[in-house]
Amino acid sequence: MSWMISTSLIAQQSLPDSLLKKFENLAHDSVFIDQLNALAFDNLKSNPIMGRQLAAYSQVEAQKINYTKGYARALSIIGSAYWNEGIFEVAQNYYLAAARQYQSLNDSIGLGRMYNNIGEVYKKLGQFEKSLEYQLLSLELKKSDPPSQRLTLYNIGENYLGQGQVDKAVDYINRALDLSKLADDKRVIAYCYWSYGKIKAQQKRYLDAIGFYQLSEQLWLELGEKRPLAQTYQDFGAAHRQLGHYAMAEEYLRKSNSFATEIHAKDLEVNNYYYKFQLDSAQGKFAKALANLYRYNSLHDSLNNSSKAEQINRLQTIYETENRERENAALRAESALRSAEVRSQRIIILAIGAGLLFSSVLLLLVMRQRQKILRVNKQLNDKTEEVQSQAESLLKLNNELQDLNKNLETLVVERTAQVMKQNQRLAEYTFVNAHKLRAPIASILGLINLLQKANAEEREQIYAYLKHCGEDLDSIIREIGRNLEGAIVEKD
Image: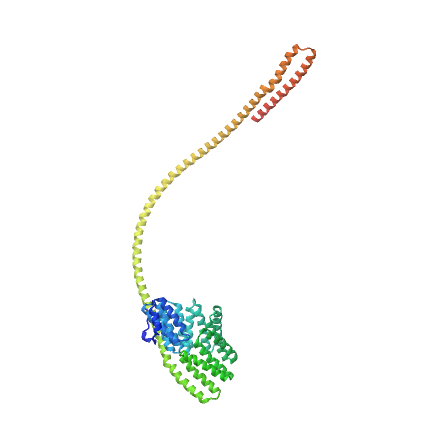
């Protein structure tokens, strides 16, 4: 169950009618709450009272619609408004309340920011170890939130500076400055320059300190941050006092007091009396110095008495007690859950045992059936092997028949080619016999007939022709013989 702060704890004043009328025309949903919180936070720089009023209105409206994140943010802004005024015990009350809300949401970044603020309150009270404890927790929770992580690094450095551990302080401030320059985070850069100035002042290097104060002053003026500007002017005054620049010191303290009064920063107004006491003492104005010291002591005691520190410690104790109670409740719930789990596990084990017994019986039946199936499968395998063997024999015989068919086809082709060649030879022989061979024989027979009737001179010519025809006949017969011999060789 989320914890809700009582509205009686909200020291709010009514908002101007113009704002109330403007808000009445808007839907009061989560978007409206977020925008209102952003407006309230922006007002903290220059008008913390208005910022607190806006945040208080947002807190009430967020509670109406059960918007826990917006409610927690409003509580945080109200706490920061009181913190700006130096009313730290009330600020701590709101920071702790906001931390509860973020814790209920498991919002590590929001919780980390609240731990940073809680640590800052402890720092203002001089409880540096307690402050450092919360700021280190804050740094761990805000790993995924670089903007607020940069500020926490700076706050840890300032914490070490308050404890006099300058080397550690410079290390953390340097880390914060490097990250802030990369992100152009002017607010944290201004804080870092301011702390460098305080370190130089501790080392009595007042001109160097003033140089750093001037760098931070420029950024504070640009950002409109009045509280840190008032604090920086106090440090300006202290540095000029050490250098003997009393008029300058007086002017800076006047500026500081003006800003502190404007934003109702009571703690800074009180501290100004102490700075004036130091300045008057340095100038030999002892009557004024005693008067300022008296004002400082009386107001300081009323502003920061021990009962307020005890109140903050009580708030912290309540917060830690509630955390432990939540942890114990969670442990009890976890224990009950584990007991239920154990009972469930026992039931499951019994069910598993029964299931295993049933499974064993079923397995036995399955094994027997499987043995029968294996026997049948073996018989089938034997038959299959026999059929496969026969199939392989038939396949082999089929392959042999195919090979024989292929050989027969080859022989048929070859024989056919030989017959065709022989037929071609016979055709050629017939052609030669019909044409070439008949021509010289016919010529010879004709010449023989003429020879019987010819005279002596004609016979000589006929003999010459007969010789020529005989030579042609011989040439043709030789050609036929060569062709027949080639055919015989090819056949062989």
